[in-house]
Length: 149
Image 1 (cartoon, rainbow, N blue to C red):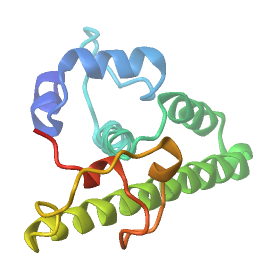
Image 2: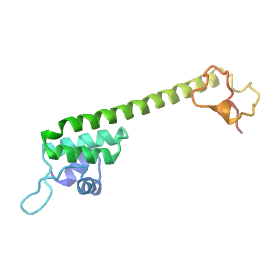
Image 3: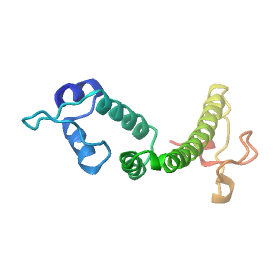
Image 4: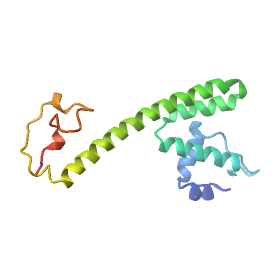
């Protein structure tokens, strides 16, 4: 496949594809005799992996390291596995943080839907009372609890 076809298929600009290859985020793409990139199935698999990992927030540096280890061969299997385990742990923590934020937003939306926010008097909050993970049932007054004009 040409770079234009791959760009369209994966919704990634040709410039980004070239950049990913240049920095080592993708292994070198096979080329035709005239030097034009000719993306094969393996190249496309790498693009799918990198697109998925980037969407998940995996750092480019970690992915470049993974590609380097892959290119070194089977002697790096354990190192690749450990790298992926570390990335999975970081992603799990981010997901947990996002779920906590989602729960707080859902709680706040529910309070608006029940009409509880409009009747509440504004409360001046201290930074200590706005701590992350504070009681979701209203024991602490958070800035989000206050009506803003």
